[in-house]
Amino acid sequence: MKASAPGKVILFGEHAVVYGHPALAIPVTQVHVDVEVLDSSRRGIWIHAPGINLDAELNSLPDGHPVGSVILNFFQRQGIPVPALDIAIESTIPVAAGLGSGAAVSVALVRALALHTANPLSDEQVNEFAYEIEKLHHGTPSGIDNTVITYAKPVYFVKDMPAITFKAGKPFTIVIGDTGIPAPTKESVGSVRRLRMHDQCAVENIFNEIEQITLIGRRSIESGKPELLGELMDQNHEFLQALTVSSPELDNLVKTARKAGALGAKLSGGGRGGNMIALVEQPKAQAVAGALISAGAKHTIITEVS
Figure (cartoon, helix red, strand yellow):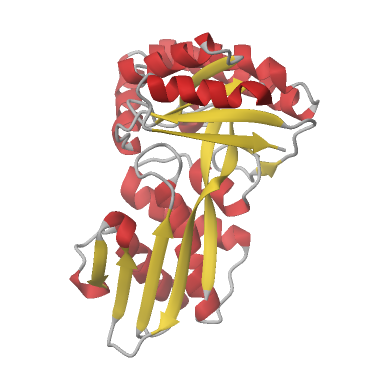
């Protein structure tokens, strides 16, 4: 049985979303994880994931291994014996880049296992399962990654509330630029937590400003005025800089995108590396992507939200 899951980027609200403020995220279908589960003639569960140099039997993996955790938790929850399986995982999503690679693996893998064992799961069940796996590896994640990847639609998300999917009133184009620097979510989330403990009032004021940006962003998308997102991105990036989660490399790519004609740009995700995003008019997308590569981006993705 086969299953797939897309990547994702956060448009607005990263970090604030961990503390109950809303965020907007979109799926990125240009990159994805594909999982195939087959019965095996060998004993145990064998995992083949060339993208992360993994070719091993489940029991040989260290405790807490991300892929192993999904498999073991699935069979424990379903209360069924662990069969002999061959699992192939292919991914075009860069790891630790803010595109949700870990959540995409969890979503695609649990769906493939559920289909193969004739224990189909609803989107809600898949999402809840993937969130539990995210918590094992990221400490206190918001849950937005697994949610937008599970539903594969633009999502308005508030922690511990039902996710709201919505449609764009008019298509718009986003260019994603990858710094090539790993951006482990757990570290940046922990850094913001410490900053908030030191000065809760100041950080909450920033979160409140980000919330207003997020609310206006959703209205702009739904009402077919995506061009308004550019200025909002610029503002959101300044607040993320104040939260100390940007980096010289991210700031450089953000400035480069703006100079190349983007309507606005910001870091996306945990920060300290990973990706930035830029709102562009479709005819300028290739030029902005090229400028980002010239400025040091390791990869770019052009995606349209429709």
